[in-house]
Image (cartoon, rainbow over the protein chains, first blue to last red):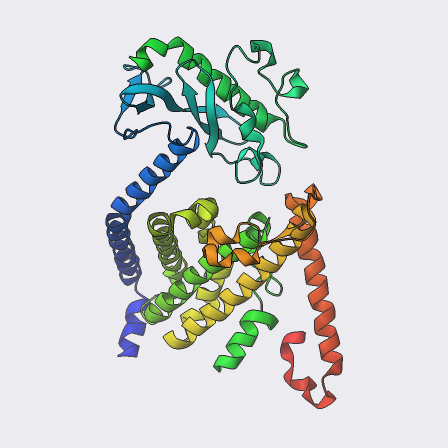
Length: 207
Length: 225
């Protein structure tokens, strides 16, 4: 038996076919794995989003299902500027705040921030939800690593003034980190851009 | 070949990082804290055991000429499945390790064991070897991570409860409070420094153990060469 396999194994066709069979089984395993985990991953990501939304809003600030109460702003947008999904927090039917994402190029890749804004354009909270900054240097933008991100609470386009929306090194009011200026600079830029976006589309968002 | 030797080899004498000098990519990239090292070690161990078992199962059917692509396909499939499973069912852990899981594919320690051990061994011993090598790798990554974390940020096992569950929160210790840390240790050069010092330390330790051993045992000790 084993000698028969030994002669077969040396044949070119056997090698190609065996590689093909392994690849087929691997693909099948991946399809099954994807099917089994697809719903659970979607659910985990939705849970993630819901808990992130709760983080950038004051506790008890809303009584609606925010994942269902959304508005796409800038609809008919292009691939360069796709429409932004804005989640609305309502209490007794009235909008108390909105949450949306904003991305800005950081040191490595895009830093994605989630920001909560009240109807007057004041920041309720900001969290970085995705980044690939240098561990130990740039990752202080995470709430788990440092309180820096809380500095944004209560800020708006009027307070501080537009020129002060920068890190201290650039003459602004926000701290940079030792050894990492590009990262906090990108976050400040993202948040400022988000506030400008809110101001520009306020009617549309709050309607 | 017996179980005791397999474990001794995997954890100490033939440790994949400290002796074989394999898996240096994750050993440098991930080990900024003890928790990251531990998590990466455990995930790698899971892949290593499964890969060893699968390779040992099909070892008689694989032609030597195409063995490398076949092993790589198997390992890449396993890593993708681990990645999906973690994302689905251990989402909090995935958020900590997510970026690094895909790196396990290029961990040469895993292909190395498939090639040098599992493809020549029965399934049972291949599984044991996977566990032993995985333990050695986990030990190495955790130790490197702990040293870098201690000097880099003054803590030990920070955020361990994210990885192992809230019941392991007791592991999280702050050795030096309000310590800004030696940034160098967290950055890649720190990885090289710590690895180099640990390697030197292991050599010294091995040499001392060697001298203490009775002279009659010397001839059986081939791996010291």
